[in-house]
Amino acid sequence: MRPRLVIFVLAIFCLSFFVYGEQPEDLIAQGDQLYLKMKDMATAQEALAKYREALSQAEDKYEVYWRIARILYYIGDHTPSKKEKKTIFSQGIYYAKKAVELEPEKPDGHYWLGVNYGVYGEIRGVLKSLSLVKPIKKEMNKVIEIDRSYEDGGPDRVLGRVYFKLPGFAGGSKDKSLEHLLKSKELGPNDGLTRLYLADTYRAMKKIDKAREELNFILNMEPDPRWIVGLKKCQEEAKKMLQRKEFRSKK
Image (tube, rainbow, N blue to C red; front, side, top):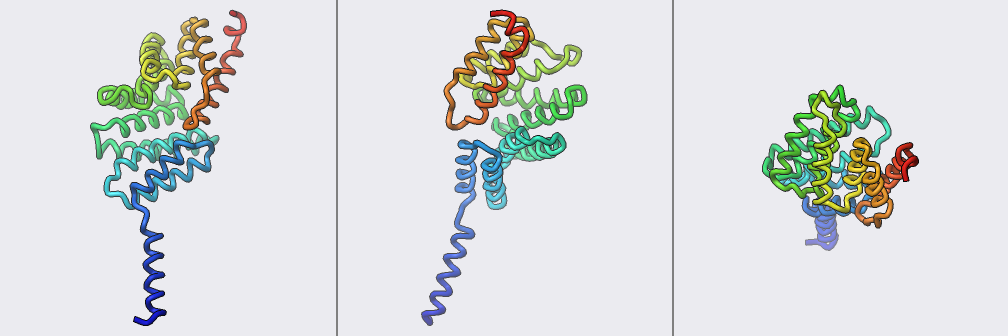
């Protein structure tokens, strides 16, 4: 073989390696690393791109489907436009359903399906989204059945917030909210969002001292490198809640 031809063949081989060399597992791992150190929307979009690339190649699409649903929740939650939020959360619901179809006895798909249902319903408004309450409860109860500790007590955290948000005539209950949030706190004592929701439930139940205790705990939490943005948001909300009249009037 002529030297020039050999060089040409080697060049094609090397190009093929770089184009097709990354396996789906590698792309998923790269997306996970981006997710864990996620601090802004650009990083989230980069993680989503990795997952979408993995989806086009993966044989086991379950592991990609639920991760896409998870990252879409984050992107939608940090998107200002309500119209865009609806679109993004709808996509999250689609991918989570695909995950559930493939692996109905694993928790990931069920959890992120319920979460995306919940945030989609919040954007539409509680009264317009009462039809989603039953599906959310179904998905979270399935996660509890499979692995109650998933996402640091995530299913109880979601159910606790659902019972808090729902009006009484639709099944809302501050007592049930408290029950689920206390269980979530037991399973994930360092989850800022659980404690923020718990403080809100305590506040609504006129248990101001207990609510203040949860809020102060949030404000004194040490930042976890994995969840800097999430904790910062919880701390901002905790500060706002402490400015409410009931907290200022009772020391």
